[in-house]
Image (tube, rainbow, N blue to C red):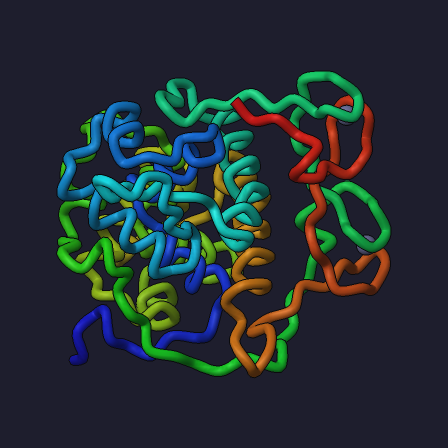
Length: 309
Ligand SMILES: [Zn+2]
Ligand SMILES: [Zn+2]
């Protein structure tokens, strides 16, 4: 059998996005960058991240196109890390992740945020809606179609996670207590399992076949998702006992940020062939892109017109 990390998997903008950001430290670094942190020493101080780990993650973010290096002092030479256009465009993903956490994580730890919509001056929450017809998102109204970029590609391990082992989805040096968002997104397999269940694969063998995931990793990820109450188990056969897995309301709600990950991956990582998959909004019949609207005034949130703290 080929090693788990070199198998062919269906093209997916979400998986491509996760190959860049599917890491707890990377998500925290991006959050700090949106709060205005730019220098190595400040990242180190704010996050308590070991220097060697920080250095690797920053290099990864520069090589991935999320940060650019900007020289702010020549003697001695010092650089700071600035979000590129691609990095800045990630704001909708972070916003929807944080919002999910406020709603569903009783102890969100270090991933909390406050969003102010500068146009109306109010504290706000993002509301997902169709960019074409402006209706709020209902998951049942979305269907999927293969896009021009459908096909398969080799699943490469993200640079920062090449040492991953099945027993731990933690990055080196990460605190033991982690927010639920980082437990579910800071590891690439977990969101892939969630996505696969969402698409209607409920049984262990279906998930294993669809994802081509080693059974011991699948079992471990399912247990973690059960513990987080993102999925629930239902027995469909008594002898021998067989269970299937369903998303809970909490698990389903993660789709708001999955759609943003997809939108971001579609824009920045689609390549020449085009989008791997299209989402169709059944209400209006158009390709669905999730806009975020202000929960207070209802207008579309634009990056320059929000403040994240
Ligand atoms: Zn629509
Ligand atoms: Zn507003």
